Amino acid sequence: MDIYKDVTDRILEAMESGDTDWLKPFTASTGMPVNGVTQNEYHGINVLLLGLLNPFQSNEWASFKQWQRMGANVRKGEKGTRIIFFKQLEKEDRDTGKIDRIPLLRNSTVFNADQVDGYESNPVDLPDLTERLAHCDKYIDTLNIEFRTGSPCYIPSKDTICMPERSAFTGNADGTPTEHYYSTLLHEVTHWTGHTSRLDRLADRSREGYAFEELIAELGAAYQCRIFGIDLEPRADHAKYLGGWLKALKNDKKFIFKAAAAAQKAIGFCDSLQLSEAA
Image (tube, rainbow, N blue to C red; front, top):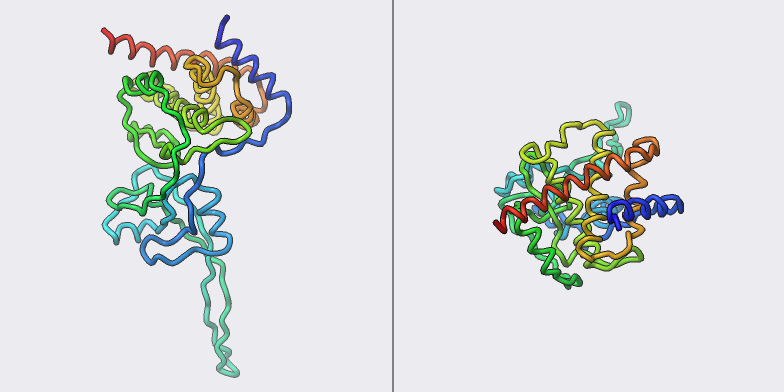
């Protein structure tokens, strides 16, 4: 059986179901989000923006300048999160001399403690619900990838993969904590193969180029999960994630097959490193 073709066909079939509600497979921090400098809690809509919608395990946030004042530095390439607040504008009535206070809506950008160097965040004690798969861990170790803790992403300028702690991964209708952890990890590993020193695949920074690269990475994860025996059947969340990016490419399914070829090449590159290590 051609695993690559079988997985691709099943994913395309799942995409036809119309269920496109992709669920984030890892948790955000616990507790109310607080400012890492003042320790004041954030309120209102900012609780949603900094808590429920973010994957970081720390609940501490601060602006770029606030982190600098604490001797910490936001890592290059990290994306901030916008929050909103009200600032009181004082205006004096010329006739009565009365001071009116007018609330003005303002916004600011903050960064999580997981996004900075030089600061030890308060640890969040979450149980690790994942199972360690020795054969997959050994395969990844052989690649000699540099990892950092943070929201899952690959940073080409640093040639670094960021991953949440294993304990951040939870189960849902689409898979177990173990499946979600390794699927996310293998997605980022596929991105890693696109670096200029490897397959040189990341030059197109347009929206279409980014969407196409996401197709490659998710297919790479789906293939590897099947190869490693992590998922014997393609999961619904692969189809949901791919469906979202395919919309950016005007639902043209030819991109799926082009991405499939690139994903296979990415896996072949990783396999070649296993062989060179064994030699």
